[in-house]
Amino acid sequence: MEARSKRKLADRFEIENFGVNLTELAPGGMSALLHHHTKQDEFIYIVSGTPTLLINEQEYLLNPADCMGFKAGDGVAHQLINRTKELVVYLEIGDRTPGDEVNYPNNDLKGTQLEDGAWSFTHQDSCPY
Image (cartoon, rainbow, N blue to C red; front, side):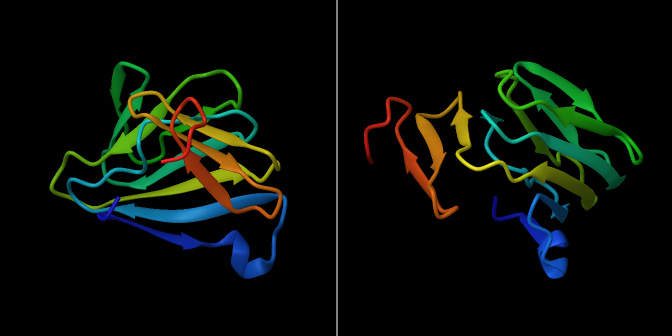
């Protein structure tokens, strides 16, 4: 994720129920590891560039003004990758439901949101690293 930068727009206005990030992916960058959430919905809107959207094992080329939503708890894993030589800019919107878990099916990794909002990362079987 070194080629990714985020500006947390909702935080600037002290919005607490949902987050909005303006995210940039440099060439070769990715949004995150392939993942899905148990409680927090996500939505993306492509502002510029043509990222590749991975949904489980399928790939889709997105264009400016394309959007996609990811319902929490459905087990559908997703990830954006910039395979072009141009910058990709997109908005990501997500709710902030507490007690979320993030599963990374291609990695032995699980994130659990703690009561204070911080994240704890473990192996998929919940054993610590």
